[in-house]
Length: 131
Image (cartoon, one colour):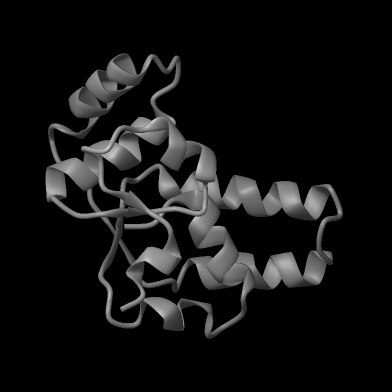
């Protein structure tokens, strides 16, 4: 499972950006899609990359190999996780909750998120997936 920061980076890597995850099933909560669109738009708006490059990444978003999952307990579990970590917002907790409910790892480039969760949560960086 990948978060918006991770997904944006792989979209920006070009058409073969998801090759790294060729043997990995990628899952996400429904909120991934608007978060990635927002992140890409912000990159373009700030001029961090050429607009054409970001627009191309945005076009690849619809075909990226990520399956949306929305289990019935997702919202409740995200709420509980946000309470547990003392977070005012539940955005990051949605990804953690889905990973927990599906018993899988959350792959993220967000070092801050990785540092904010305890050892019981399976949050890893892409390099942790290497053999």
